[in-house]
Image 1 (tube, rainbow, N blue to C red):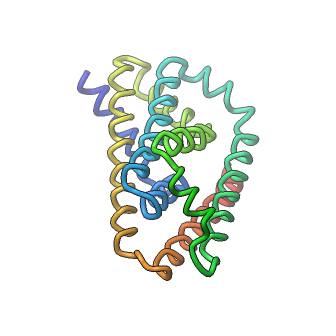
Image 2: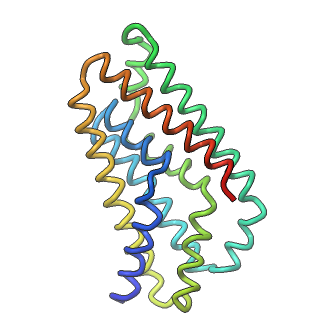
Length: 202
C-alpha cells in the first residue's frame, strides 16, 4: 500500500507542478473572484488527474494506445479553448472601467461551474493518461492501483490548492484597476503562450 501510495504522490506532483495554462487559469480565477472559486477550479484539475491515473491503472498500455490516434485533435481543441480564454481575459483588461456585464459574470461564477469547467478543460490533455500509464507499466503493473490513484489525486489537489491560495493573495495585493489590468494581461499572455506551445509539442 505505502509503496503504491508514494508512487502515486510522486506521479501526481510530477504532472501537476510544471507551469501550465491550467495553473495560470486557477491562479487568475482566485485573483479575480475568490479563494473558494479558485480552490474549486483546482480540485477540478486534480479530479482530472485522478481520473486519468485511474484509467491508466485499469487499462495501462491499451488505453494509451487507444488515445494516441486522437491526441492531436484533442491538443488542438485544448489550444483553441485556451486561446479563447486568453483573448477574453485580455479584453477585460483593456476596458476603461468595470463593465456591468463583467461584474455579473464574476458574480454568477460559482464554485461548481469553476470545478466543472476546469475539469473539462484538463481532460482535454491526453498526454496525462499516457504519462500515468507509462509510470504504472514501468513500476510493474497496477498492483496497489487504488492507492496509486489516491496518492496521485491528493498530490495534485494539494498543489492546485497552493496555486489557488497564491492567486488569492495576489488578488488582495493588486486590488486597484491597474493591478487588475496587470494581472489580467499577464494571465492572458501566459495562457496564450502555453496554448501555442501545446500545438508545437509532440
